[in-house]
Image (tube, rainbow, N blue to C red):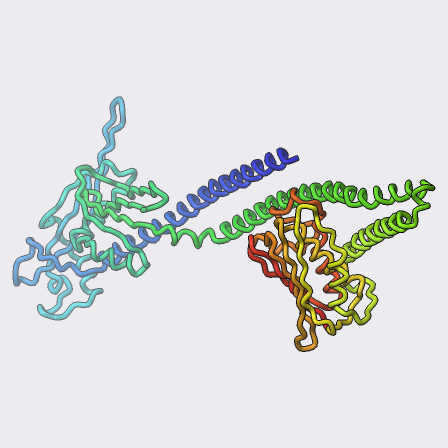
Length: 498
């Protein structure tokens, strides 16, 4: 049985560890999923900030001093992006796209017919640029870029427009950083000129779950090879709120399973302990019943002997032994009966006035001292002290305490009894100089069938004595407490209503 319990114990631990391992692996997968989702949302926010920044740059007035403007002549300039598409046919079709940006000089006041120096509105400036585009055939300057790497005309047009925006209002790290901070995004921003054309945004997600970061390489002017590298580090604690439901469910399931396994194992241990207690109870009961039954058998055999029965003294001794054996059997069965009551109120009591001094004298006179021990009993109870109680039960209580003092002691044992009255109660103390009770056993000694480690196996018994004592005292409305020092002795204090 012990081997099976040990095996079950190992299997339970392995099952719990395996389950916890599976939970950790599953939670790791859920965290990876939540982290990827967080990264996707973060990337979308960053890209939106980049688009917003581009819109701001497009609307910004051109503050760059253009070399094509003549100082003080009042000329204005505007740029017009355009691209052309060429295809060459042979064994393969080769597509070549060329992007151009033309810069024109014009006088807005002349085109609009206004007096020089007249303030212009935004609508008037736009109208002047439109007229200039229609009337001027030769640009003052042009920039040519190879846009062959574009996937289609839309991408080539967008790239050409980005060059125009960059010439008009250069991309600045602090400009995009201010927009990111408004969104609560902290990032390291680096502006870089690539050796080759980068057409599309490159996104690198986390490589480590402990210090994750997302990196975006964003080409803000493809044809010029200009890119912005934005690296945003992610705090793992920011990811956890997105999976709190999963964490709670996982925690509850884990706790429930572990508790179930622990309760199951605890139940098995209790059943095993009950099985050992049952076997020990049966063995002890047989042992306890065997002694009075053997005595009765000897007495009955003596009654059949005419010579022995003819001796008056022998006959009295046989009858006394018979009554003593029957009293022991009756006391034993009464103890078994009382200990099975679930409620102390069920125990029948015959309340009467009991002289405690005389009662303890009767207990002391009935002590059977082992041949190898010297027992000294001191009765320090006031001769006039009386308490209302069931005399038979109170006798059994004191007898149990005295028997235990004799049983769990050395060669020489001293037992002292004393009592005092206090506020309507009587405190009865029974002390000894025996082996004492280990501190770990004190809180368990009044439990049924409990036997301390120091006494188990050394002395016969079922672990019912002190449980029986406590039950009878509570039936009287009293209490019992114990103080003990291991190796020096024990003192039981019984408090009964007077």
